[in-house]
Length: 109
Image (cartoon, rainbow, N blue to C red):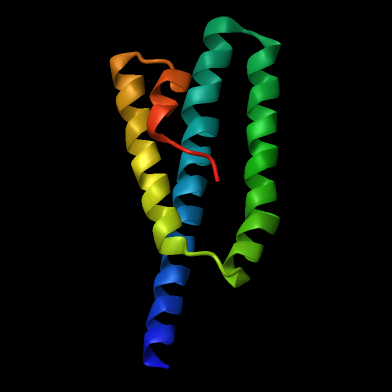
């Protein structure tokens, strides 16, 4: 039973880590990125995009993550896949590669 408790603790810690990272990400976008872009281009599309992302974050926090905590998902493997993909996308952004081109090693489940 101790092994299960350890796995549950790892899963809970990973879910918390993902939730915290998303909250930080959303806050940075709302406080810094979106205001700067809106000011620079004064485009309604940026406002709509910001609203869609805000809605998605609220949906995830309110529903998806709650369900994820109780789901039979291998969160350790999922977290590792997400971290790998994040690194790929960050590298692509640094090099100027388009997201679809950077997607080559990622398979959707």
